[in-house]
Length: 403
Image (cartoon, rainbow, N blue to C red; front, side, top):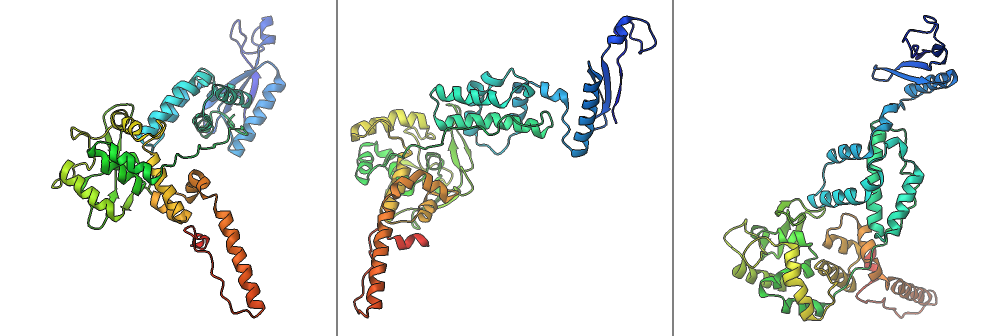
């Protein structure tokens, strides 16, 4: 239990009653208590009632297990953010680079010099509003908020502050822009105009749905042309123009075997024979003109953008649009969301709906048509009619979506 007494006389430093200085009567009240770790703590109050209330609160918090060291709230946000960043694990280098840039440019300018306990909900709301007013994309605003919230959550876990100010904060809706959809004819034009060395790369991206890093990191030894498949086991990573490295795929679901259509087997076989090293399993399948690992920025500037111009396509079309094209073709051919998610190796089918749901707009009319035919068949059966009504058999057969 904490104890309360008058602090020593500020003039002679003697205890109350040991001196006659008038200052001793105005000395603050001193509270001595032990924190949950057993360390001796001291805090002073001008009024005895405040000191008594503090003692009661401390003892109650210790019993509930919610005790917070008052000194912890005075830690600067920037100092604790550096600690929280150093303890984060399982992040890709590109994610680390992005988070560091947002923390440096958007989060620290707002809270870096603030004490953790001095930031409240109103401050966070004002900051989010300022980010929106600056024209940041909703996804960027949400990512900035997540970074700040994580720092405060870490402070709560370390008992530096009682609660996080990042609570009940309204964030802009995470509305992803509709993916650019290339037609098969447009992809063919791209494959014809890119340098011959990159023809197979473009076709493989479009007809397997693989990401850039997965193809740039694909090795010859993981390609099986006869069985028409290859294994995605690592990806090429390039961070801020630095040296390229190799790391694990984006998610656990991304790792695995990717199959491809028969025509692509011929394209890849010819590519390996001409531009790669068939006898070296560790050799990269797709490389630059000099046989070096592909760099996304160089490829975009030297190969992709000139090819878009020659093919008559907008400059805004990215290499990732080839992955979107693969998904759109599957949906148009009648593949259900589970099949599309499996081909694209999405960790969750909800991701498929978020990104490609707008391409499935025709489902409702097809389902209504199916119900019309079901009713007609039921009426014929109840009236004794012998005619069999065929169900619709369009490419997007809604009966397949229940698999």
